[in-house]
Image (tube, rainbow, N blue to C red; front, side):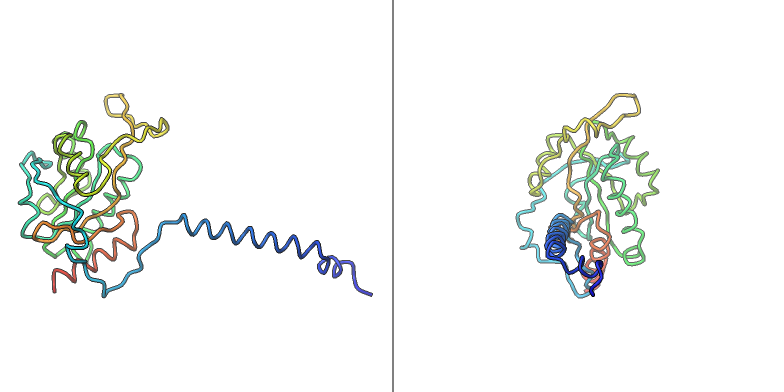
Length: 230
């Protein structure tokens, strides 16, 4: 005589419930996979792409200043490879991760001794004064000879980002993301790209990587070292 436990597992109701549960779990797993940002696997044989692949990402003529108040223009992007990021100093959401990864990239064994420059463009020129940028750079331990934190006039930043194909920086409108400034006032969180751009010695964009993805950062370092050393 079959046991009641065995009969329970062999009942039609059990198989129907099991099938439905399995389908639901599969659907949830698929949705999670679709929503999860894809990570580029590290491939030591992947070169940086031709500028033609990024021809829509134009770097307009610009005039900005760095954390020391020195003028910066397009000539800063010529004659050497550059990694560019986008940030603002009061950011408490994405920027600590992005700028931390930028620092680790700059100080990595792969790129530390390579002729690479780094540039972080402020998305909040109203609050990111030269003095503020200087303090931020100092707190991060930035190598001033290799890494410039720059600010431009608001109109220029809007044009600069639009020409690269990005949505110009703007507040996200979420009251839960309000940022308290040192004087006690508040500002909205600013939406900006999390991309790191690689710019060749001719001042052209040749690579775009996710600045919040460790795999992409590692790939960037590998690709850039390979491009520098031929």
